[in-house]
Amino acid sequence: MIPAPKSHALTWLEDEVFQVGTGGVLCFLPLVRHLGLDRLIEQSLYPQTKTLSRVASILSFLALKWTNIRRYRADDLWCMDRGLGLFAGLNILPKATWFSSYSSRVTSAMNTDFLKRMHALWAKASLYSDTAHLDVTTIPYWGDDTHLEHHWSGKRNKALASMQALLAQDAETGIISYGRVGVTHQQQNQEILQFLDFYRSEKSLSKPLRYVVFDSQFTSYENLSRLDDDGILFLTIRRRGKQMVNRIDQRPQTAWKTIRVERSSHQKQTLKVHDESVFLRGYDQDIRQIMVIRRGKRKPAIIITNDFEKPIAQIIQKYARRWLVEKAISEPMEFFHLNRVSSSMVIKVDFDLVMTLLAYNLYRWMARQCHGFAKATAPTLFQKFFANQAEIHIKKEMIEVALKKKRHLPLLLETMNEFQDLTYPFLGNKKIQFLGASHT
Image (cartoon, rainbow, N blue to C red; front, side, top):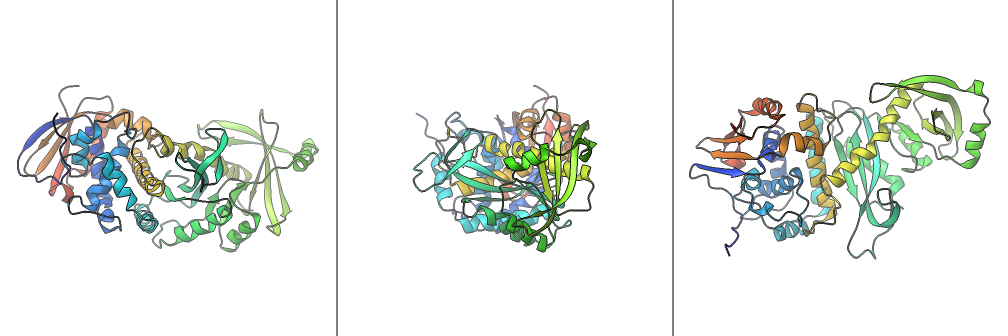
């Protein structure tokens, strides 16, 4: 039996040529360097050892997430792939036990510090609009669940022992700016106020947060009044009781107005709406209430907001994006394997969430760079661009990555050419040149 090599930093003493099955993941390195993510990681509080630096450690986690390796029982060859090792400046990635051991050393304070650093990074890159969508997602727990609450999981259509995570996503760019694990039933109403404190901790925002959009049970009506006092506009759905539905059904047809609203597919949708101002108990003041009936739906949606100026159609369009949030949030849960049970590697959930958000956000940034793919999902981007083999040629001052022919390779190479002058300190200060191979 051939002993498995130990992971160590590359020494760059000689030229070398080798083939890898995960060459596409190296296309994320220019993005890491361009955004200064390597410096951000180096300045973080995450642990490191004499053998593996802080940058090499975090990039090792990201390498697995970006290649959609289903951690990790279904594929046990990743720890021998030199392409993944090169991504982190190593000969190969560490073994599974190292990942679990590293995770056990990470504290909540380290994760919070890194989230704040990432928040500043996305703000500096102008990746925030003035609107954030908030949602709570359920992360099932498969170990001893005696210390956990039971939360409803829409995916599994039942309540189960799990952790709740609050996520905040930018309405325009799709960047997930905030994530916190361990939200309990008792704490949930106050989470929106903690998010606002976090968001406002970064003073360099080009567009200050103006709107928050969330689900009906996300917070209490009393906290809506606090948002109002803070100058934050909100959009949410009012909880719909039987008596309210009966009152709506009794309204005369003349009370409804027909409008046409543009959907995400740029097609028009016909809606019946009724706009009014009502007194809301708990909020203790008048609030704008817009009742919306879609064709084929028996029960109306009741949108409430403290924005009395924006036209009805714009209010509905703004909230309609909220209906797409659950799909966007399910992507990190699936592609980036946040709650997959096929893993033989035990990673702390809060640390795994931070790494997932980082991996997801850089996929979103990459999608914005590839013309025509701004709205493509991570699985689509992976299959079209990054699931590719490559021949690696390490030279004195350059690393050449010759990617095999694929239909969308020219577009990817065009994007990579914008970063060809970058040097990489964690790769021996070499440059990286991406080429198209002469074979498929």
